[in-house]
Image 1 (cartoon, one colour):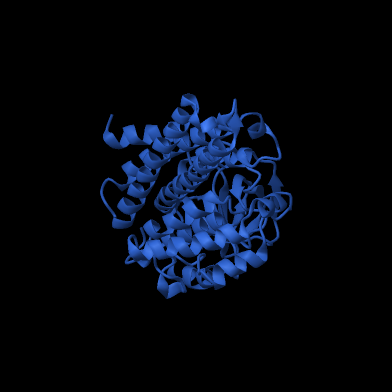
Image 2 (spheres, helix red, strand yellow; image 1 turned 90 degrees about the vertical axis):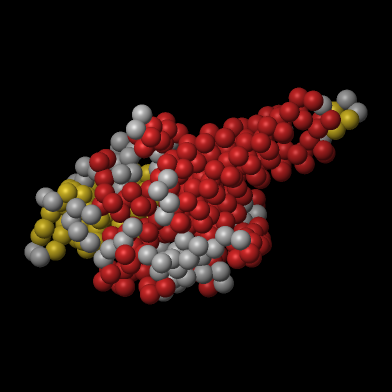
Length: 378
């Protein structure tokens, strides 16, 4: 990580409990099922007034941005609580995209660019998105084919087609990965600049928008070294994996609660279905997987915040395990609800869609299992 991002504060324990209480109350009141369904039908996919409240009241966009750039300076272990609570309520928000773009700016080591862009991101005035992945679906530097070349003392991004850009169609700033003569670099590109086109695409997860972003001769600002993307993206991808693992834990927690409550309320053959052994077993297994996933996700967050040598390893373990475990819990929630669980009107499918989408974003289980083997030298 860049030196300008060093010294950020870890906050598990009492502070995290207070943060969870605040965030829980906020998202539960602002992200009701009715509101989620309303927002997923809109082009933007989020409510700007709620985004402003997230920034003004809770200061969430700047949570892990260093204090010298207008943020609070916390680390990923504190932010893990936020992602879990947002996942539990299927929060429709450009939070993940903005946080990851801000992390890329910090990791670039470009203090001048950080001073220019990060204060507005921390305050919620500007939203950002990370444009790295292309048709191959990779989020590391090796998967980047987009090219950038010098032009009139600046840089122009050429033939850049970016896929799976989370909230890319509504972002004010794009952090784009492109190849330079020296290697792969990161560039800050104004989203409304000439040569930039953005189109929202249909996705499995209706509660999180993605876009296809095309750049043709768009001018951008180089962030750090022209070959600095590899290290910066490794930093960002590690945090993305933790964020999605924690989100998925939140999804699984809500699915478990829904199943248990339904098993108590639904009466069949004169008794609650929760009294049947098969349903008990399902709910017990959902609990086991959810708690194991939570342990894995928070272990990764704590290890990463502490800079532990095994942080990358436990992060890949967490992303792989949480992805599959939480998708299974979300699917079982549908099964426990029986026929009603398969209907559009019930919310079970929305949680399943979020779980399956999180499973593939920033590397699926196979990718992270391969990363674990590589780190173990197998």
